[in-house]
Length: 114
Image (tube, rainbow, N blue to C red; front, side, top):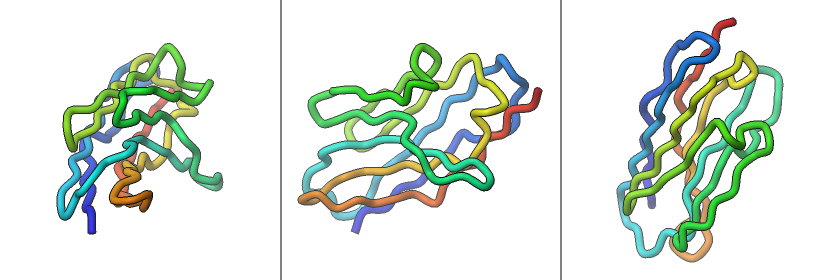
């Protein structure tokens, strides 16, 4: 079992910045990919950004140029700049590890006021 704990969410005005952090713990044999997803009220969960063990990056078009994902061993970060009200939602940390199993954190709320 892999456990993920997110931190760094909060309330910020439009144009501001936040940095999310996620730490993985538990029985980890191999991390293939770590990333962030978000779910806005009334919407489905969507990909924000991912980073593979080889440091390949993938971003949603809506966050390109504003968000930066990075990784340090079993921790993953999301630097969010120029935040917009539409970035509001619960942000979930994800890892695909241990032979292709997906694990999820409980989420951290990001609220961007206009």
